[in-house]
Image (cartoon, rainbow, N blue to C red; front, side, top):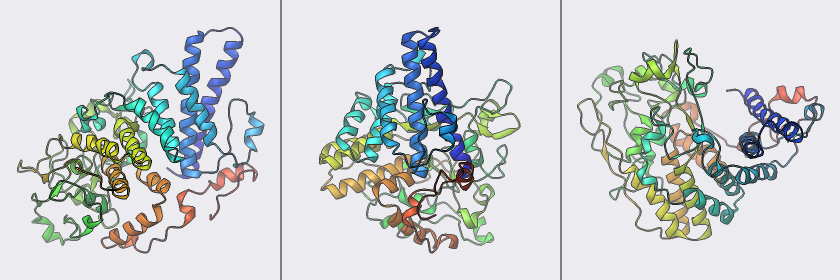
Length: 464
Protein backbone atom coordinates (compact mmCIF):
# COMPACT_ATOMS: atom_id res chain seq x y z
CA UNK A 1 0.00 0.00 0.00
CA UNK A 2 1.22 3.59 0.39
CA UNK A 3 4.45 4.25 2.27
CA UNK A 4 2.84 6.04 5.19
CA UNK A 5 0.60 3.06 5.93
CA UNK A 6 3.55 0.71 5.61
CA UNK A 7 5.46 2.77 8.16
CA UNK A 8 2.47 2.78 10.50
CA UNK A 9 1.68 -0.93 10.18
CA UNK A 10 5.21 -2.14 10.86
CA UNK A 11 5.74 0.27 13.73
CA UNK A 12 2.40 -0.95 15.10
CA UNK A 13 3.94 -4.42 15.05
CA UNK A 14 6.93 -3.07 16.95
CA UNK A 15 4.59 -1.41 19.47
CA UNK A 16 2.70 -4.65 20.09
CA UNK A 17 5.92 -6.57 20.62
CA UNK A 18 7.13 -3.87 23.03
CA UNK A 19 3.86 -3.93 24.95
CA UNK A 20 4.04 -7.71 25.22
CA UNK A 21 7.55 -7.53 26.66
CA UNK A 22 6.57 -4.74 29.04
CA UNK A 23 3.54 -6.64 30.37
CA UNK A 24 5.55 -9.86 30.60
CA UNK A 25 8.27 -8.17 32.65
CA UNK A 26 5.69 -6.77 35.06
CA UNK A 27 4.02 -10.15 35.42
CA UNK A 28 7.26 -11.97 36.15
CA UNK A 29 8.22 -9.33 38.72
CA UNK A 30 4.85 -9.64 40.43
CA UNK A 31 2.05 -12.19 40.26
CA UNK A 32 3.76 -14.61 37.87
CA UNK A 33 0.53 -15.65 36.20
CA UNK A 34 2.69 -17.05 33.41
CA UNK A 35 5.10 -19.88 34.16
CA UNK A 36 8.80 -19.16 33.82
CA UNK A 37 9.04 -21.62 30.94
CA UNK A 38 6.17 -20.03 29.05
CA UNK A 39 7.51 -16.53 29.82
CA UNK A 40 10.75 -17.51 28.14
CA UNK A 41 8.86 -18.60 25.03
CA UNK A 42 6.79 -15.42 24.95
CA UNK A 43 9.90 -13.28 25.18
CA UNK A 44 11.45 -15.21 22.30
CA UNK A 45 8.34 -14.86 20.16
CA UNK A 46 7.98 -11.14 20.82
CA UNK A 47 11.63 -10.38 20.15
CA UNK A 48 11.75 -12.32 16.87
CA UNK A 49 8.60 -10.55 15.72
CA UNK A 50 10.09 -7.18 16.67
CA UNK A 51 13.24 -8.06 14.75
CA UNK A 52 11.13 -8.97 11.73
CA UNK A 53 9.23 -5.68 11.77
CA UNK A 54 12.39 -3.63 12.14
CA UNK A 55 14.17 -5.58 9.41
CA UNK A 56 11.34 -4.89 6.96
CA UNK A 57 11.35 -1.22 7.90
CA UNK A 58 15.12 -1.05 7.52
CA UNK A 59 15.07 -2.63 4.06
CA UNK A 60 12.45 -0.15 2.88
CA UNK A 61 13.44 3.07 4.66
CA UNK A 62 16.95 2.41 6.08
CA UNK A 63 17.02 5.35 8.52
CA UNK A 64 14.82 4.54 11.50
CA UNK A 65 14.04 5.61 15.03
CA UNK A 66 14.53 2.64 17.35
CA UNK A 67 12.00 2.27 20.15
CA UNK A 68 11.75 -0.68 22.52
CA UNK A 69 9.89 -1.66 25.67
CA UNK A 70 11.94 0.81 27.71
CA UNK A 71 11.14 3.81 25.48
CA UNK A 72 8.42 6.09 26.84
CA UNK A 73 5.62 7.36 24.62
CA UNK A 74 6.95 10.91 24.84
CA UNK A 75 10.44 9.77 23.85
CA UNK A 76 9.07 7.76 20.94
CA UNK A 77 7.20 10.74 19.51
CA UNK A 78 10.32 12.87 19.16
CA UNK A 79 13.03 10.28 18.55
CA UNK A 80 15.15 11.04 15.45
CA UNK A 81 15.62 8.37 12.80
CA UNK A 82 19.37 8.08 13.25
CA UNK A 83 19.65 4.75 15.04
CA UNK A 84 21.67 1.80 13.75
CA UNK A 85 18.94 -0.80 14.12
CA UNK A 86 20.81 -3.86 12.81
CA UNK A 87 22.66 -4.57 16.09
CA UNK A 88 19.31 -4.37 17.90
CA UNK A 89 17.73 -6.73 15.36
CA UNK A 90 20.60 -9.16 15.86
CA UNK A 91 20.22 -9.01 19.66
CA UNK A 92 16.51 -9.81 19.35
CA UNK A 93 17.14 -12.77 17.04
CA UNK A 94 19.84 -14.13 19.34
CA UNK A 95 17.34 -13.90 22.20
CA UNK A 96 14.88 -15.81 20.04
CA UNK A 97 17.39 -18.60 19.49
CA UNK A 98 18.11 -18.75 23.22
CA UNK A 99 14.49 -18.69 24.37
CA UNK A 100 12.46 -20.52 21.73
CA UNK A 101 12.01 -24.29 21.55
CA UNK A 102 13.42 -26.36 18.70
CA UNK A 103 9.92 -27.19 17.47
CA UNK A 104 6.66 -25.27 17.16
CA UNK A 105 5.02 -24.32 20.45
CA UNK A 106 2.10 -26.71 21.01
CA UNK A 107 2.76 -27.99 17.46
CA UNK A 108 0.88 -24.95 16.16
CA UNK A 109 1.64 -24.05 12.54
CA UNK A 110 2.91 -20.51 12.20
CA UNK A 111 4.37 -20.26 15.70
CA UNK A 112 7.96 -19.21 16.25
CA UNK A 113 10.77 -21.69 16.86
CA UNK A 114 14.56 -21.77 16.91
CA UNK A 115 14.85 -22.54 13.20
CA UNK A 116 13.00 -19.37 12.30
CA UNK A 117 15.23 -17.26 14.54
CA UNK A 118 18.36 -18.93 13.14
CA UNK A 119 17.26 -18.52 9.53
CA UNK A 120 16.41 -14.87 10.12
CA UNK A 121 19.66 -14.14 11.92
CA UNK A 122 21.54 -15.83 9.10
CA UNK A 123 19.70 -13.62 6.64
CA UNK A 124 20.69 -10.47 8.53
CA UNK A 125 24.32 -11.64 8.64
CA UNK A 126 24.14 -12.28 4.89
CA UNK A 127 23.05 -8.68 4.34
CA UNK A 128 26.10 -7.66 6.37
CA UNK A 129 28.33 -9.97 4.28
CA UNK A 130 29.22 -12.01 7.38
CA UNK A 131 29.19 -15.18 5.32
CA UNK A 132 30.77 -17.61 7.79
CA UNK A 133 28.43 -16.57 10.59
CA UNK A 134 25.42 -16.82 8.29
CA UNK A 135 26.43 -20.20 6.86
CA UNK A 136 26.73 -21.82 10.28
CA UNK A 137 23.14 -20.83 11.05
CA UNK A 138 21.83 -21.90 7.64
CA UNK A 139 23.47 -25.31 8.07
CA UNK A 140 21.70 -25.73 11.41
CA UNK A 141 18.35 -24.92 9.81
CA UNK A 142 18.85 -27.21 6.82
CA UNK A 143 20.20 -30.09 8.89
CA UNK A 144 19.16 -33.41 7.36
CA UNK A 145 16.16 -31.94 5.56
CA UNK A 146 15.99 -32.97 1.91
CA UNK A 147 14.36 -30.22 -0.13
CA UNK A 148 13.94 -32.62 -3.05
CA UNK A 149 11.25 -34.51 -1.11
CA UNK A 150 9.13 -31.38 -0.60
CA UNK A 151 6.93 -30.56 -3.63
CA UNK A 152 7.55 -27.05 -4.89
CA UNK A 153 3.88 -26.38 -5.65
CA UNK A 154 2.82 -27.17 -2.07
CA UNK A 155 4.24 -23.82 -0.96
CA UNK A 156 1.44 -22.05 -2.83
CA UNK A 157 -1.41 -24.50 -2.25
CA UNK A 158 -4.03 -23.46 0.29
CA UNK A 159 -4.52 -27.15 1.21
CA UNK A 160 -0.83 -27.90 1.87
CA UNK A 161 0.38 -24.55 3.15
CA UNK A 162 1.71 -25.82 6.50
CA UNK A 163 4.20 -28.23 4.95
CA UNK A 164 7.76 -29.04 5.99
CA UNK A 165 9.31 -26.32 3.81
CA UNK A 166 7.47 -23.52 5.59
CA UNK A 167 9.59 -21.62 8.10
CA UNK A 168 8.40 -18.08 8.75
CA UNK A 169 4.98 -17.46 7.23
CA UNK A 170 2.26 -14.87 7.53
CA UNK A 171 -0.72 -17.00 8.56
CA UNK A 172 -4.18 -16.28 7.19
CA UNK A 173 -7.64 -17.59 7.94
CA UNK A 174 -11.22 -16.96 6.91
CA UNK A 175 -13.21 -16.27 10.08
CA UNK A 176 -16.12 -18.57 11.02
CA UNK A 177 -18.59 -15.85 9.99
CA UNK A 178 -17.00 -15.72 6.53
CA UNK A 179 -15.26 -12.38 7.05
CA UNK A 180 -11.71 -11.86 5.85
CA UNK A 181 -10.27 -9.60 8.55
CA UNK A 182 -7.57 -12.19 9.30
CA UNK A 183 -7.19 -13.36 5.72
CA UNK A 184 -4.68 -12.49 3.01
CA UNK A 185 -5.72 -8.89 2.47
CA UNK A 186 -2.23 -8.00 1.29
CA UNK A 187 -2.62 -9.96 -1.94
CA UNK A 188 -6.27 -9.16 -2.58
CA UNK A 189 -5.51 -6.95 -5.59
CA UNK A 190 -3.54 -9.71 -7.33
CA UNK A 191 -6.57 -11.65 -8.53
CA UNK A 192 -7.48 -12.22 -12.15
CA UNK A 193 -9.05 -9.05 -13.49
CA UNK A 194 -12.65 -9.54 -14.51
CA UNK A 195 -12.57 -13.31 -14.09
CA UNK A 196 -15.53 -14.85 -12.30
CA UNK A 197 -15.53 -15.64 -9.41
CA UNK A 198 -12.55 -13.38 -8.65
CA UNK A 199 -13.55 -10.16 -10.36
CA UNK A 200 -10.58 -8.19 -9.09
CA UNK A 201 -8.08 -6.65 -9.73
CA UNK A 202 -5.22 -7.68 -11.98
CA UNK A 203 -2.31 -6.09 -10.08
CA UNK A 204 1.20 -7.51 -9.51
CA UNK A 205 1.88 -9.03 -12.90
CA UNK A 206 4.96 -11.00 -13.95
CA UNK A 207 7.19 -9.18 -16.41
CA UNK A 208 8.07 -10.17 -19.95
CA UNK A 209 11.71 -10.30 -18.85
CA UNK A 210 10.89 -12.79 -16.09
CA UNK A 211 9.10 -15.13 -18.48
CA UNK A 212 12.09 -15.16 -20.81
CA UNK A 213 14.44 -15.80 -17.87
CA UNK A 214 12.92 -19.29 -17.53
CA UNK A 215 14.33 -20.36 -20.91
CA UNK A 216 16.94 -23.13 -20.74
CA UNK A 217 19.69 -24.22 -23.09
CA UNK A 218 20.11 -27.66 -24.67
CA UNK A 219 21.63 -28.90 -21.39
CA UNK A 220 18.65 -27.77 -19.33
CA UNK A 221 20.56 -24.89 -17.73
CA UNK A 222 19.57 -21.21 -17.50
CA UNK A 223 21.06 -18.64 -19.84
CA UNK A 224 23.25 -16.79 -17.35
CA UNK A 225 24.81 -14.57 -20.02
CA UNK A 226 21.57 -12.67 -20.63
CA UNK A 227 20.95 -14.30 -24.00
CA UNK A 228 17.49 -15.33 -22.80
CA UNK A 229 16.42 -11.91 -24.10
CA UNK A 230 17.38 -12.87 -27.65
CA UNK A 231 14.39 -13.89 -29.75
CA UNK A 232 11.90 -13.00 -26.96
CA UNK A 233 9.02 -15.32 -26.16
CA UNK A 234 6.06 -14.57 -28.41
CA UNK A 235 2.80 -14.25 -26.54
CA UNK A 236 -0.20 -12.61 -28.15
CA UNK A 237 1.02 -9.24 -26.88
CA UNK A 238 0.95 -6.55 -29.54
CA UNK A 239 -1.00 -8.61 -32.05
CA UNK A 240 -4.04 -7.22 -33.81
CA UNK A 241 -7.45 -8.29 -32.56
CA UNK A 242 -7.78 -10.53 -35.60
CA UNK A 243 -4.36 -12.12 -35.09
CA UNK A 244 -5.12 -12.74 -31.41
CA UNK A 245 -8.08 -14.88 -32.43
CA UNK A 246 -5.79 -17.32 -34.21
CA UNK A 247 -2.86 -17.18 -31.76
CA UNK A 248 -1.39 -20.62 -31.09
CA UNK A 249 0.87 -21.45 -28.16
CA UNK A 250 4.28 -22.74 -29.24
CA UNK A 251 4.73 -25.90 -27.18
CA UNK A 252 8.16 -26.70 -28.66
CA UNK A 253 10.02 -24.11 -26.59
CA UNK A 254 12.33 -25.27 -23.78
CA UNK A 255 11.43 -23.87 -20.37
CA UNK A 256 12.16 -24.49 -16.72
CA UNK A 257 8.86 -25.96 -15.43
CA UNK A 258 8.74 -23.41 -12.61
CA UNK A 259 7.66 -20.88 -15.24
CA UNK A 260 4.13 -22.23 -15.44
CA UNK A 261 3.83 -22.58 -11.67
CA UNK A 262 4.71 -18.89 -11.36
CA UNK A 263 3.23 -17.25 -14.45
CA UNK A 264 -0.11 -17.63 -16.21
CA UNK A 265 0.44 -17.69 -19.99
CA UNK A 266 -2.20 -17.63 -22.69
CA UNK A 267 -2.98 -21.16 -23.84
CA UNK A 268 -1.86 -22.89 -20.62
CA UNK A 269 -4.30 -24.36 -18.11
CA UNK A 270 -4.60 -22.18 -15.02
CA UNK A 271 -5.59 -24.35 -12.05
CA UNK A 272 -9.22 -25.39 -12.69
CA UNK A 273 -10.24 -22.11 -14.34
CA UNK A 274 -9.52 -23.55 -17.76
CA UNK A 275 -7.05 -22.20 -20.28
CA UNK A 276 -5.66 -18.73 -19.58
CA UNK A 277 -7.46 -16.67 -22.28
CA UNK A 278 -5.12 -13.69 -22.52
CA UNK A 279 -6.43 -10.12 -22.42
CA UNK A 280 -9.69 -11.00 -20.66
CA UNK A 281 -7.76 -11.61 -17.43
CA UNK A 282 -5.45 -8.59 -17.75
CA UNK A 283 -6.27 -5.24 -16.22
CA UNK A 284 -4.37 -3.10 -18.74
CA UNK A 285 -2.28 -5.05 -21.22
CA UNK A 286 -0.59 -1.97 -22.69
CA UNK A 287 1.06 -1.07 -19.38
CA UNK A 288 1.18 -4.38 -17.49
CA UNK A 289 1.94 -6.90 -20.19
CA UNK A 290 0.23 -10.18 -21.13
CA UNK A 291 0.90 -12.36 -18.07
CA UNK A 292 -0.73 -13.02 -14.69
CA UNK A 293 0.66 -14.35 -11.43
CA UNK A 294 -0.15 -17.79 -10.04
CA UNK A 295 1.42 -17.95 -6.60
CA UNK A 296 -1.16 -15.65 -4.99
CA UNK A 297 -4.15 -17.48 -6.49
CA UNK A 298 -6.18 -20.50 -5.38
CA UNK A 299 -8.23 -22.94 -7.49
CA UNK A 300 -11.71 -21.89 -8.50
CA UNK A 301 -13.21 -24.94 -6.81
CA UNK A 302 -11.91 -23.79 -3.41
CA UNK A 303 -13.42 -20.32 -3.45
CA UNK A 304 -16.49 -21.36 -1.48
CA UNK A 305 -14.41 -22.54 1.49
CA UNK A 306 -11.22 -20.48 1.26
CA UNK A 307 -12.33 -16.94 0.39
CA UNK A 308 -14.18 -14.22 2.27
CA UNK A 309 -17.94 -13.94 1.89
CA UNK A 310 -18.74 -11.52 -0.91
CA UNK A 311 -15.04 -10.90 -1.54
CA UNK A 312 -13.64 -13.88 -3.41
CA UNK A 313 -10.39 -12.00 -4.05
CA UNK A 314 -9.53 -12.31 -0.32
CA UNK A 315 -8.21 -15.81 0.39
CA UNK A 316 -6.70 -17.62 3.36
CA UNK A 317 -3.52 -18.49 1.47
CA UNK A 318 -0.45 -17.95 3.63
CA UNK A 319 2.50 -15.81 2.54
CA UNK A 320 5.98 -17.30 2.77
CA UNK A 321 8.45 -14.92 4.40
CA UNK A 322 11.28 -17.45 4.73
CA UNK A 323 11.01 -20.97 3.30
CA UNK A 324 13.59 -23.73 3.16
CA UNK A 325 14.56 -23.21 -0.50
CA UNK A 326 15.36 -19.59 0.36
CA UNK A 327 17.65 -20.80 3.16
CA UNK A 328 19.30 -23.37 0.87
CA UNK A 329 20.09 -20.69 -1.71
CA UNK A 330 21.32 -18.24 0.92
CA UNK A 331 23.64 -21.01 2.15
CA UNK A 332 24.82 -21.53 -1.43
CA UNK A 333 25.53 -17.81 -1.69
CA UNK A 334 27.66 -17.99 1.45
CA UNK A 335 29.57 -20.99 0.10
CA UNK A 336 30.36 -19.10 -3.10
CA UNK A 337 31.72 -16.10 -1.21
CA UNK A 338 33.73 -18.39 1.10
CA UNK A 339 35.20 -20.23 -1.89
CA UNK A 340 33.58 -23.67 -1.60
CA UNK A 341 32.10 -23.82 -5.09
CA UNK A 342 31.38 -27.55 -4.93
CA UNK A 343 29.21 -27.15 -1.85
CA UNK A 344 27.45 -24.19 -3.46
CA UNK A 345 26.71 -26.23 -6.59
CA UNK A 346 25.28 -29.11 -4.57
CA UNK A 347 22.89 -26.76 -2.80
CA UNK A 348 21.75 -25.15 -6.04
CA UNK A 349 21.31 -28.57 -7.61
CA UNK A 350 19.04 -29.69 -4.77
CA UNK A 351 16.73 -26.82 -5.71
CA UNK A 352 16.92 -27.67 -9.41
CA UNK A 353 16.41 -31.40 -8.90
CA UNK A 354 13.27 -30.64 -6.93
CA UNK A 355 12.05 -28.39 -9.78
CA UNK A 356 12.62 -31.21 -12.27
CA UNK A 357 9.93 -33.24 -10.50
CA UNK A 358 7.15 -30.76 -11.26
CA UNK A 359 4.32 -32.28 -13.32
CA UNK A 360 4.08 -30.67 -16.77
CA UNK A 361 1.41 -28.03 -17.19
CA UNK A 362 -0.99 -28.76 -20.05
CA UNK A 363 -2.72 -26.84 -22.81
CA UNK A 364 -6.41 -27.01 -23.62
CA UNK A 365 -5.53 -29.88 -25.97
CA UNK A 366 -4.03 -31.77 -23.01
CA UNK A 367 -0.46 -31.66 -24.26
CA UNK A 368 2.55 -30.32 -22.38
CA UNK A 369 2.65 -26.53 -22.69
CA UNK A 370 6.42 -26.53 -23.29
CA UNK A 371 9.40 -28.83 -23.47
CA UNK A 372 10.02 -28.74 -19.74
CA UNK A 373 13.59 -29.42 -18.74
CA UNK A 374 15.72 -28.39 -15.79
CA UNK A 375 19.02 -30.14 -15.17
CA UNK A 376 21.64 -29.91 -12.42
CA UNK A 377 24.91 -28.11 -12.96
CA UNK A 378 27.91 -30.35 -13.59
CA UNK A 379 30.47 -27.75 -12.54
CA UNK A 380 30.95 -24.24 -11.25
CA UNK A 381 34.19 -23.42 -13.11
CA UNK A 382 34.99 -20.26 -11.17
CA UNK A 383 33.63 -17.99 -8.46
CA UNK A 384 32.13 -15.46 -10.85
CA UNK A 385 30.18 -18.15 -12.69
CA UNK A 386 29.04 -19.67 -9.39
CA UNK A 387 27.91 -16.28 -8.13
CA UNK A 388 25.84 -15.71 -11.27
CA UNK A 389 24.32 -19.19 -11.04
CA UNK A 390 23.25 -18.80 -7.41
CA UNK A 391 21.81 -15.34 -7.96
CA UNK A 392 19.92 -16.44 -11.06
CA UNK A 393 18.55 -19.48 -9.22
CA UNK A 394 17.15 -17.22 -6.52
CA UNK A 395 15.32 -15.32 -9.23
CA UNK A 396 13.81 -18.47 -10.74
CA UNK A 397 12.91 -20.20 -7.48
CA UNK A 398 11.60 -17.21 -5.53
CA UNK A 399 10.01 -15.18 -8.33
CA UNK A 400 6.98 -13.10 -7.31
CA UNK A 401 7.67 -13.75 -3.60
CA UNK A 402 9.04 -10.30 -2.75
CA UNK A 403 12.79 -10.96 -2.65
CA UNK A 404 14.15 -9.75 -5.97
CA UNK A 405 14.50 -5.99 -5.44
CA UNK A 406 16.10 -6.36 -2.02
CA UNK A 407 18.51 -8.97 -3.39
CA UNK A 408 19.58 -6.59 -6.16
CA UNK A 409 20.14 -3.79 -3.65
CA UNK A 410 22.28 -5.87 -1.29
CA UNK A 411 24.32 -7.20 -4.22
CA UNK A 412 24.91 -3.67 -5.48
CA UNK A 413 23.29 -4.58 -8.80
CA UNK A 414 20.03 -2.63 -8.64
CA UNK A 415 21.03 0.16 -11.01
CA UNK A 416 22.62 -2.07 -13.64
CA UNK A 417 19.93 -4.74 -13.63
CA UNK A 418 16.91 -2.46 -13.44
CA UNK A 419 18.11 -0.07 -16.13
CA UNK A 420 18.89 -3.04 -18.38
CA UNK A 421 15.48 -4.51 -17.59
CA UNK A 422 13.79 -1.21 -18.44
CA UNK A 423 15.53 -1.12 -21.81
CA UNK A 424 14.32 -4.64 -22.63
CA UNK A 425 10.81 -4.24 -21.23
CA UNK A 426 10.60 -0.81 -22.84
CA UNK A 427 10.80 -2.51 -26.21
CA UNK A 428 7.30 -3.80 -25.50
CA UNK A 429 5.83 -1.09 -23.25
CA UNK A 430 7.02 2.48 -23.67
CA UNK A 431 6.39 3.43 -20.04
CA UNK A 432 9.58 1.60 -19.04
CA UNK A 433 11.88 3.43 -21.42
CA UNK A 434 14.47 5.84 -20.04
CA UNK A 435 14.64 4.58 -16.45
CA UNK A 436 17.36 6.40 -14.54
CA UNK A 437 18.05 4.57 -11.30
CA UNK A 438 19.65 6.85 -8.71
CA UNK A 439 21.55 5.88 -5.52
CA UNK A 440 18.70 7.04 -3.28
CA UNK A 441 16.37 4.59 -5.03
CA UNK A 442 17.87 1.76 -2.97
CA UNK A 443 15.52 3.00 -0.25
CA UNK A 444 12.19 4.77 -0.18
CA UNK A 445 11.51 8.26 1.20
CA UNK A 446 10.43 8.66 4.80
CA UNK A 447 6.69 9.43 4.61
CA UNK A 448 6.20 13.19 4.84
CA UNK A 449 3.17 12.67 7.08
CA UNK A 450 5.43 10.94 9.62
CA UNK A 451 8.02 13.72 9.45
CA UNK A 452 5.27 16.28 10.07
CA UNK A 453 3.82 14.26 12.93
CA UNK A 454 7.23 14.08 14.61
CA UNK A 455 7.60 17.85 14.53
CA UNK A 456 10.72 17.49 12.43
CA UNK A 457 12.47 14.93 14.63
CA UNK A 458 12.43 12.55 11.68
CA UNK A 459 14.51 13.70 8.72
CA UNK A 460 14.12 12.80 5.07
CA UNK A 461 16.39 10.26 3.40
CA UNK A 462 19.13 11.80 1.27
CA UNK A 463 18.09 12.50 -2.31
CA UNK A 464 14.37 12.93 -1.62
